[in-house]
Length: 349
Image 1 (cartoon, one colour):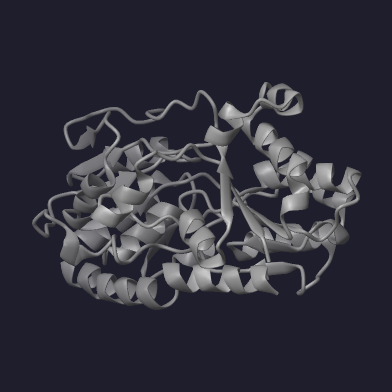
Image 2 (image 1 turned 90 degrees about the vertical axis):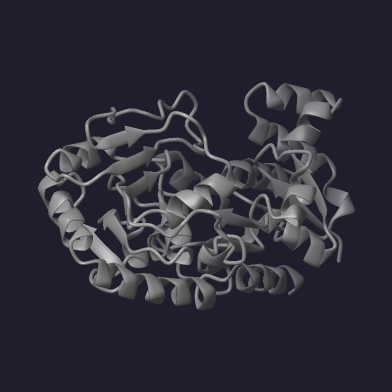
């Protein structure tokens, strides 16, 4: 079976060698393509394309350009895998118009937006081969639009590369010197800043990283203070791993949204053997169990967050206990290899 993998990012030209050298975590798209023997198309291919329809589509967005490029090459492949609904939905409409059905598998990260809900209702079940979602909340969103079809909608666990995010591979000394928080997508750093003002402990915020929102201001809601350090440089993956290693625990302060904003930070923290304090956003509520792998506080509640920070800081034994549990959980439940093999099996059906 000939398979195409569509990747909605601009990867570094040296990504494969960087993975081999251990500079970055393994990449799911590349590993899946390797296992399936698939061809990969991404935004670099869209930039190099000369077809008039692709040129017109990419003026709207790179995702549309990639969808059109894949539609033009549809007869070369028996199955298509898209890493996100930003590519998958436009491609599904194009394939529907071309009367090509049940060839497309898409990972749905945030299907709850009104326009995307409407798209899923218009497309229907027969226009997909598989829909993969990474949280119970996103499965609920899809079932509302398409019906409960277990042969179509697959709820898989998110992954983390525990070979890379391994405390034993960090070059930093294992430390308890600060509370660590990082990321951009739907973060609520204002609440975290107000909580930090209520406790004396040092907090390091790296408010950078990937976000799908154009023009996103990465430092919105957080400024340096006596006990808050704000790092304005994007960390390399090795630096990020060291930052986790040096923290006593990790805080993931996100807004109340129905998709898994902040989940990468949660999983990286779990893999690094760190306890997690998380806000009770519906999108990540299932990944942080209160009093088991961390503490959960109401969204937007600075007093509760300050209390949780104080509770973990003053009980390092609890942090260590949760950290050991979290490392085991990352290795057994959120395995990178397990996710790739499951998706490959679905694609091969």
